[in-house]
Image: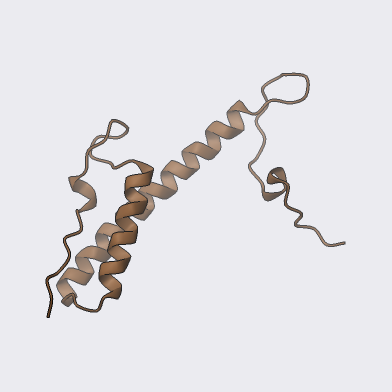
Length: 101
């Protein structure tokens, strides 16, 4: 059996945003590393559980950051006359057609 890759725990990171929280990009990188180590099949059950817990915390943090970004986009969006208006963030706002023809 090879060596177990060391994946930093979510609560060991520090960032200027939230105290102890990694940046969004760091969280994504750590999630990818956790998935890779869990998929390797070389980890004992206790380590798998710890990795799952850490990944869950990171995932929650990413969801919160995306929700915050969505709110900022809604607040900053302007209409054609230059007035700032809050609009919901929807797929059709990105130019994708979700309707049927």
